[in-house]
Image (tube, rainbow, N blue to C red):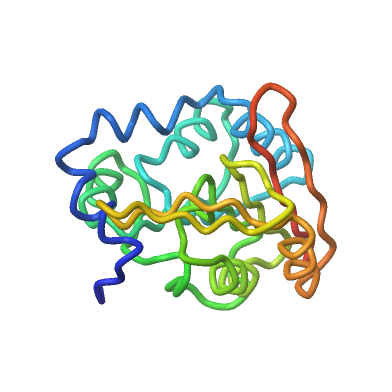
Length: 195
């Protein structure tokens, strides 16, 4: 895969800091993960593409809840993809801005805690909407803001951006009906695009 600066920290450092990385990801019982599983169940979702799948915690939650779905995880880290495969999961190397999947090939495409780490979100949203046939779910770990706040670390090239909510929603509306869901227990929120 071509080296892209915004992904390089994850590729270089996750293998060396796996326990720390896993700690950042939380558990299958995080409120946003429970919301996603309930949404999938309520809407009879049968196929899910997890972009930036990490260690496939969401797949573990799907299995724990006995959701009968076709799952594939995509990650830029070959280390994480191989770890997923070693655990029996369907995982491939790829990135959210150039998803290696056919148009409308997955009922639901979701990205959890990834948009804020990108230089900007447009290409990622466009790609997620291209490969989804019904829904795109973006789970945000930073709050939406009144103004874009593009923040990149000088030492490790990791973005931790907050995006202007009205601009983000307007961009997403070109692909379908947009709903914003705020999760009360923490700063997380969800953007749901119904295609």
